[in-house]
Image 1 (tube, rainbow, N blue to C red):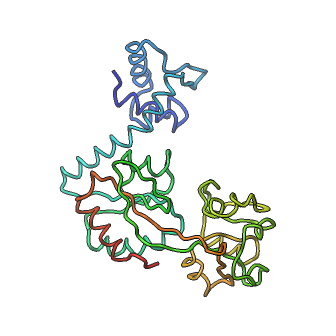
Image 2: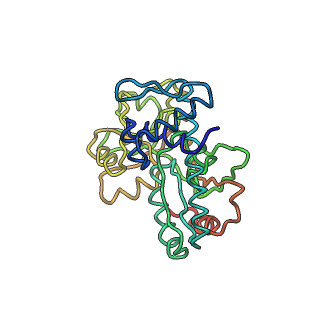
Length: 297
């Protein structure tokens, strides 16, 4: 009953905002697009959308189909791409999902030799996921997930890559720079800079602030590592980052790294892959290079 075109129509309407634009994107006439949905409504016995002037509003059934479209179409498109690769003899692309903002510098050390070793494989990096990194891996939207917080699930295997210490980056002339160790209460009057990640997933909150019942004076999100550390150097805030990243910027910026808590916060980066994909040459080639660069950041 449900055809792929029905799902594509609903997804394009959501993306484009109107029937006319969706029809243009799908290379259909507007009447053909409307006819396809009317036919589905007749078969299913329920309305998919309600017209409101020149626009349409999805019914509950339509919203359900739209959710299915956003989940299923990427998988079907991946199947199309794999079939095309087999037909042309090309090996396609390795899609890497990033749940670790600072890890791009490590990834670059793998990408350059990988592209040399695998000239028929491109690398595509994905950072934003509709349903999270693990869902993207299960739904075949990505092939490898780079994450500091692996979720052990059946069908997914995680390989440890490198360990690091999460520290507090502060300006060299900041009062906290005079301390060897920073405690939770020391951050109550500070502006905390972080990547745009929910606080429930930030190590500083999970390991220190929340257990101590402490919140920073202000929490500001910054997407760019360069801008974040420039702001730290200018005393616009402090940031919890890997020690290796702070040390890498120290020659250019007046910043220092200070331990978080008496025992510090130790983390480990992992690569997650589908167990069913183990043995694929292009994937195994990347994991071998990652293992060879383990601990090098």
